[in-house]
Image: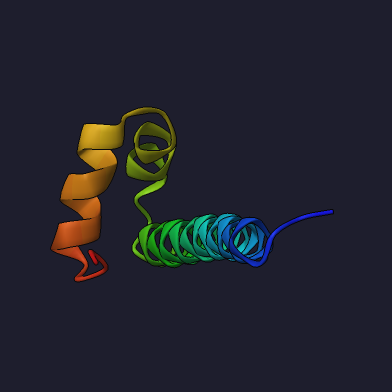
Length: 72
């Protein structure tokens, strides 16, 4: 049998874990949306080599996100 304090601590721990998981999922989704928008704009601009490089080079990708106004 758990004490009130133990039960409260377990509920708080579960709530923190769920909030963290939800935040991670939202962050991943936002990142995917930004990358999709970047690739779409690069393709529309005929910059296929830049799209390929952005998929492999995080620094270059960040520079392109800034160039197109897609940074956080």
